[in-house]
Image (cartoon, rainbow, N blue to C red; front, side, top):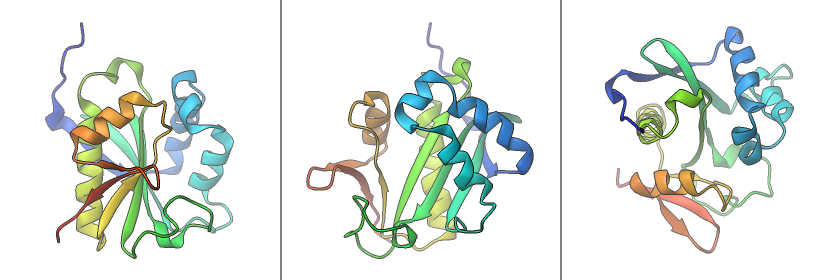
Length: 165
């Protein structure tokens, strides 16, 4: 049975070096790797040993005090060229998110994670819109985005949350 969990105990905190092992374990899980690709590429960016990824903002998702997932956001204008958001307006931020602990999947927590991440961006940045770029076959992620007000832009394939600030 898919029991809804207490969504009031979800929080985000910045990633610490001590979180890298858990993130690596999560990124190597089949149900995550099929959407996120090569774990080492993600870990390279998160570690940021060369200082080239200062524009990425990484967070651990906590359920109460227990790490259950990972999310990040970034200013699309600071990414390398060649992505779907290259022609988006200044102030566009992209999000990524995952739940790495299976007992917490399909419990209604993904929506809370996306809501909190979007609130965080609105608090810390000056966004004009927030976008997500899920793999088209990732139906669960797409449903979650739509439930949270994101709309598919068929020209770019991006899911966009316009902000009226």
